[in-house]
Image (cartoon, rainbow, N blue to C red; front, side, top):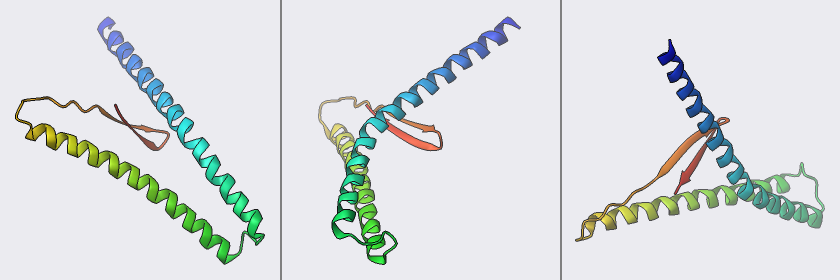
Length: 120
């Protein structure tokens, strides 16, 4: 029974660690994304006040859809650029005459139904 309790205690430590990592990644993510999102919202609000049209207007809805598409495209481009850089580094390491080891540390976590990505 004591061995079983030790295994359960180790599992509890691992789950607590994973929760800690999840919270930390979420906080780091929010620290970057929230201020940027606030800037975008402020710019959209300033645009809304400048044009003085109804939010239900089809023209305003089209504008909001356009802004959403720009933000989403920026996120896609940032992800693709990171992955291309990682691929280029791997290819160059494989082509190098001198044997070298390239260590990639990539973590994926699913926290609160959101996948978080962290590459060190």
